[in-house]
Image (tube, rainbow, N blue to C red; front, side):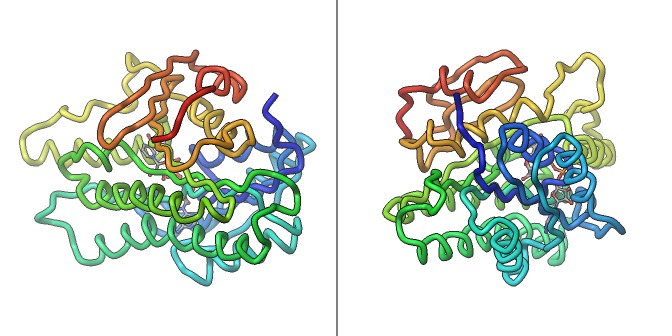
Length: 304
Ligand SMILES: NC(=O)c1ccc[n+]([C@@H]2O[C@H](COP(=O)([O-])OP(=O)(O)OC[C@H]3O[C@@H](n4cnc5c(N)ncnc54)[C@H](O)[C@@H]3O)[C@@H](O)[C@H]2O)c1
């Protein structure tokens, strides 16, 4: 069994999509969850409400423990406030899942300074700042976690960060930076007992649907319509968000204690360990699977 009972997990951008799925999955295993979400559209425009409350309500209704957090994690003070809130509520933190991001597909020639600043701020600073703030806190506690759990950070990158695509250049470069951060931070923080790993997911979410629609509008306007496919097409196999979370739960657990500095691509039961731009080992699981299935498939895996 993968044990997460009592673990305290902080997940950024957990109000929707992949982050929401992580939050529900951790709570089902008895972890206590901080559901962070600022409440923005896929391209970063502020919305009136944060979806964090409804995820917390869902977890509590099912008998789990969770609190909502509305901080903007791309702001250093916001990242610190996220940690402070988690410590006030639960006295300690064991796992940080850096999941929040935004995307603004656009031709390079139309990209504005504001687009570049916003996407870099949320995706790069919004990953770096929580990682820095949480790692600095863990350093003050020494190498052993008070709860005896494994200290783990899971960051979210994207295939586009490894395989550049038109109109995704700004998003891709931020995700490439996240991959660099995973590997650099893992090497540096190992001595503090902190593991840092990455996932490059693909799943049916608002971001995926809205970004693909926007890409197709751009492609249509330059006469190459259809190249990006239609994320809502019925013949496309489903890529449920729930198929991403078991790997993340495994990475947060002691079962993956030997794994740090690794980046996995993951979608619909297909998990691959990335080695630079290439897939080194590929594991095929059913679309619906558990963290124990991941453990069984990946046991003995050595991180790059
Ligand atoms: N869906 C995919 O196929 C796919 C592919 C590759 C990578 N990813 C990555 O997976 C992660 C989750 O994506 P998703 O598809 O679930 O997206 P989503 O847009 O459905 O959810 C992202 C959430 O993050 C929140 N958020 C954005 N900026 C924030 C900020 N500054 N502070 C706090 N919260 C903030 C949003 O309000 C939103 O609820 C992202 O890092 C994304 O880049 C997704």
